[in-house]
Length: 139
Image (cartoon, rainbow, N blue to C red):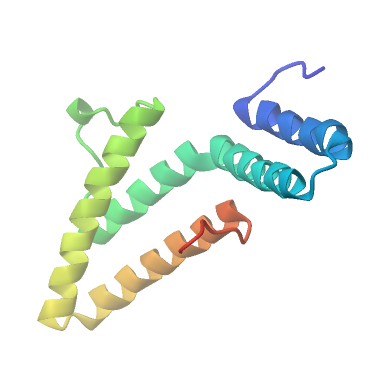
């Protein structure tokens, strides 16, 4: 029993049950592969659930620093940690970053381009960590 269940812990427990209880009872090889793929999705989702708000808010701060902003205004939901609100702030910060990076590239701003590419590399590294080396078919 999990005393203080988080979404991450619940998903990891589902993953454990799937592998330890369900998989041994499956005889069809195609279904075994499906169960293993479901396990990967559960583990990836657990990892993301445990960290995505922190990751997004950290990246929002990094993008704001790249843009030269000191932070978001109090009226735009800054500090609100509801996932939908954080995702909205992340999307706005990402769009502003993309425009600023495009400007840096077009204007020959080598320092801005270097800093922007470093932020993009960090984002890709974090996505690869969450995906545990897995990628959807066709990607």
